[in-house]
Image (cartoon, rainbow, N blue to C red; front, top):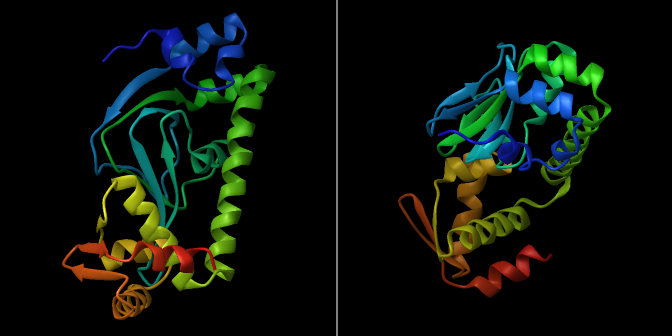
Length: 224
């Protein structure tokens, strides 16, 4: 699929204000790539070759502990870039987490050399990069705060309601392991808490599915 240069430039807040020569450089030396769902886009120990600006789809960025436990750090959606990639490009370091395409993804790939040149030459491009970077860092601090300080039953209730709202259904297609990764905890903790929710007649469970049968009970806990 081919996109007009001005079309994809305008999809990213801040890039439309780039100086004409910078826009020309960015467009001519970048490329549009397509990545199928479930592809590992980057992983620990690998150096970033491009800054990806997502045009469509979603990328899940997650980290695996030495004990094998996953935690989802954040997701990148259309109109956004990956803060971890930005950090690694700026610091000339390898990735410490992995990024996986949750859906089919289309993105603009800006090569490292172009990224370096534009960071050095264009104040507008620097502002665009660091604005996205600072917003995502703030989001990550919120994740850390939730994992460290918020009650797990409250977080689980919030996540179930969030997933139900996204799917537009009382049936949430998820496993205990997937929920544990979303919340940064052990699968056993999620299983124990879901059993408690079921005991309270808020949910029922079947393989790979949680059905919400008492939304008000979950909502009351989520506000606690």
